[in-house]
Image (cartoon, rainbow over the protein chains, first blue to last red):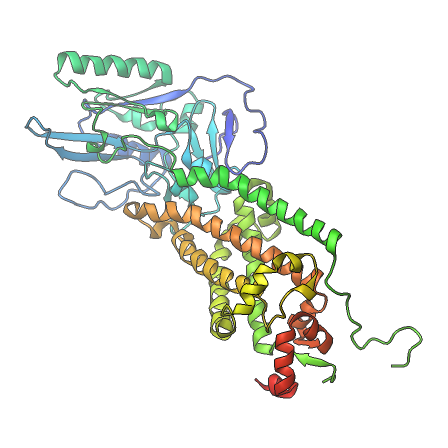
Length: 298
Length: 215
């Protein structure tokens, strides 16, 4: 969805600097998701569908409360349930709201070859512009969170927009608006980090969760969706949240050194061949192919 | 036919070559558009990036079939011989156009054989990795490693073919006048055959050009 008056700082597939980047200063925004107070009501799932005009998808039952195995191109917000048995005994029903993490270093945008199909706003939101998407699916390779989803009908890729349209108008994202327990909060990234840290401290000191902490993975430069986890040392337990997410090294190699090496080799090759021709020329001159020379009889 | 000229490429070989060649050029141009933002305009010229992305895999299938066809027709003539090994040792002279110091080539010289095997190998790799990248929803998250391998291997294989392709086009059009025409019209002059593929020429002379043409 195009948000012309949000400040754009990064454009996919764009040659040269980003026009107008740095014109305005904006505070980074963030969703704070406290998994310790989530009750799994799925109000955020419904609010997301309603606000974004998506029709409800069929649910798949897998002996769990989870609506479906993973987010889809038309279902961007999914509560992941996990019945988890901690080492010290007992049973925990973990619930985590899964959606785009809005990475500071977005692998999807880095991998995308289509100009303007993915943009990053100064407030940190990473947004897909489907009218520029060419349907190559490279963003799927760039993402360490399994978020971009390809629509087999439109051949475009979709994901959570962090309600960029609402944020642009000074509203909180639809999921935040719908949360009944207050486990979802929205504000500046700095404020949310302070709140998250305070909550994690409370969990450590007063609730017996010695490993409670904040999930704001540094491998992707931090994210604009942060979690409070009962056990920050084991994020995988929360429906497969990666421990140390990074833009995959093959994507970084491909978009970094390989690109420069390849370009250098191609340009060098063209120059080399041209210089070879100047120096050595053809191996023989073109033969006359049944063409009579001037004054000759055919 | 002009008695001064002999058949070098049959109609079937020429059709095969140009099926591969023209499909490769399309793949190269659209591939370069997705390779770098500075070349994205190529896709625009070719009808838009969405169309380019949609057609690239299909043209890739045509290219793969053409390369396999080439394998069926030419593989038997592409084996490395002692003369080829000697040819590689005298590569410096070949590059400097000192061809009198290069062993006489058969129907295909050692460089052409490298081109053949290089395109066959890279073609298969490009096809397999291309298949993974074709429709993003074909690869589930549990097999994501395939996609991660494909995004790096596909461009590397493509770069290797670009190196082969640049040398091939340069040799065939600029360095050996008559070569390009032979791939279009099929025949070369005896002088040309003796100049560039003496061993082949002597062999053809023995069996006679008429017999060769009928093959």
